[in-house]
Length: 443
Image 1 (tube, rainbow, N blue to C red):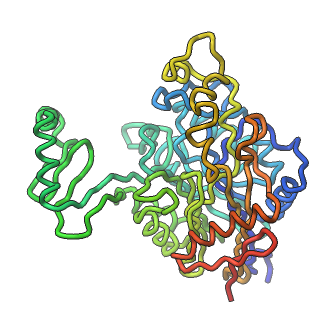
Image 2: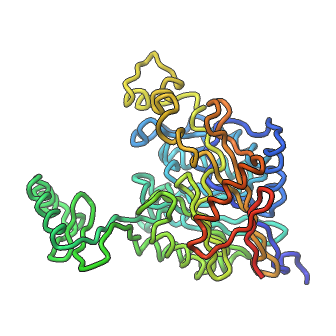
Image 3: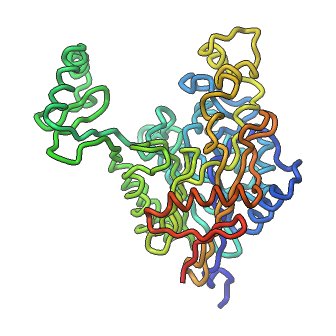
């Protein structure tokens, strides 16, 4: 062999969502430094950068209801210090500071030397793979977010019109299959409430934007109802145009890189929050079929199961990597307005009011404050094993401390891993747990 990468050996660290407002490099707990050592030891270390990187670029998007998230460019130095070298930028915070925030994030990531994917100056650029060159080979990343993004989707370039900066989206739409009685009730509600008149008026001017109803399907409040004799329920369906274009990017990455990762940020729950939706399971397997070596899901901010498809891992959600939403120094007017606060109040009042002093919302649920990061090991192009390391983010700790990752003691770690093993069992995935570390082995 001439090149080291010809051996087909690589270690890939997979982390989940990162919202970072403060430095990490000042901490020195053994569990924290152990995590850093593991991430630095991987050839490629990935996370989802769920924030804008900006100094004073852009203005907060009003639709965020006072929860835009931006970090100073200096946080990128801390991510590199931890060992991160590859990030996704496609998520529901990508557009928090508009087009200017999208572009500033790209610029600062490039200046920091961090490989990235998922946003771009056009839709084509946002769909294109990002590349990280390592001694173990070239690693490609194709990144996207699902339809929880209401604004910020990148626009495609035309010969006669410029493209629009934004993110790569895999759009989804809710579809409910219902029986005849329910189908008739929905039509009656739409008629009784006057929504049919709204649809009729909109069709006069924008007929291409309002789908036509028929005896088998009916549209109400941007929700499609389908008459069916069985399999009643609500699910998400993906936009086939987005799906096919993204799979082409995965195929392109397969030819241009030694290793291919696919990242999807999703919030589209069809049932319990710990269960991935049906469309995501199908899409993950399609990505593997088209050449991906690992599928990296994130977005629910809690753990979901792990699947192995054709010898390649699918992580539906590893929960969080860092979540420092409560130490943003300045917030826009809307953050105070929606909570009935005044111009005299400061961010601490927003955090107190939003969570009712830590009694409700995400701060009150333990599953939000625990997660896992994984290291995936290939030898001779074959998956050898996956190691799973639990993370604790300081549930019930003070606001000044919680939100940063640390590998917990063995008893806490085993509990987290046992829960992940339970979630993974329906996929036929067996996780062996020893001394606070999870292991998935392959022959």
